[in-house]
Amino acid sequence: MSGATAQLQEFCRIVQGGRHGLSGNDFVPEGYPAYGAGGINGFLSTYEFDEPAVILSAIGARCGKCFYAEGKWTSLANTQLIFPDRDRADPKFLWYQLNDETRWHRSGTGQPFIKPADVKSHRVFLPPLPEQRRIAAILDKADALRAKRRAALAKLDELTQSIFLDMFGDPATNPKGWPIRSIEDVATIVSGATPRTDVAEYWDGDVNWVTPKELSGLEGIYLDATERRITEAGLQSCAASVLPAGSVLFSSRAPIGHTAICTVPMATNQGFKSFVPKHEVLDPHFLLFWLRLRKSYLEGLGTGATFKEVSKAVVARIALGVPPIDVQKSFAEIVRRLEQLRRTQHAARSESDAVFASLQHRAFEGAL
Image 1 (cartoon, rainbow, N blue to C red):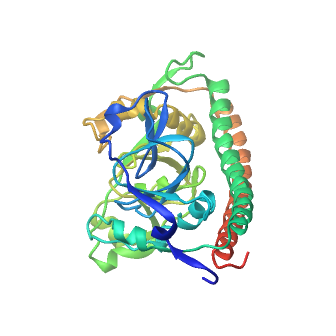
Image 2 (cartoon, helix red, strand yellow; image 1 turned 135 degrees about the vertical axis):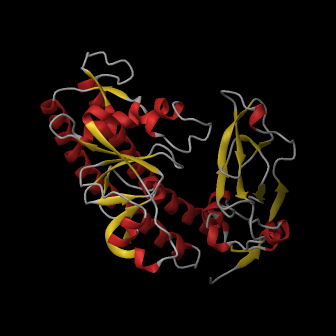
């Protein structure tokens, strides 16, 4: 970092968040945003501040994440509030600089946190105010481009679900009267299993092995490869089945309800109930979006509040209206084309993210 720098306490008022003891119990459907360690957690009928600030998540795995608040808003616990002197610092410029989890010193082990003293002594790049505003304006434009890319991807999700509903109707009510079939009539249900992780000969093999975590960060509906591979000996040790390409994965443990179509043979851990469609009557694309639209219903069938596992007995209770296979395949072709478009949009989003990161780095090194 080159150029003028200053500690936050030299030009900011720093306040502990959540001083009024408000929580989710006080939320209302509409009102003033309430910022906690995860951002806007809900809304309140009263506000605490009416000025811009940087809100620092001060406790937890994501401590160091920052949020920008302006207008009327309220703070919740586990936050530090940073109010810059606007004669010396532009609030948006400061937020862009501080919103970097890697720059903050964390204390604690099991539950990391950022000490108030470390917030006060934290040093930042502080060029003249006109320069701050110029940099913030550039980053605003770059960030707006990123937001458009994210919005385009979200619209693709909405479009695919809308096409499903138009072609097949709401799976909850089956308004088109498709014949009702048990899931076991149209697909083979496969449970996952996990070999011992401390046996080296079970791992670094040829078969993709997937966990629910990998589905939570998946872009799109296709899973092409996994982080780990399992050996034949590993499969045999826990009697794990290998799912053929075209199987539908459904995570029955946290994160619950994520779905994907595997494009290569895969084995899963015990966090899955997977479905191998009988292709003469069921297309995997139809099943995947049926599961997504019925996710809340499937969660409600769980045996516990955490829905740790969808048991075989529960899966057996799933019944679905099954349209003719040629209609399902027409839908599948539309989905494939939209997924190609998604890949293009995702690449564009990744490029805009890289541009933003480069601009941000240059800005706070005094090189923008």
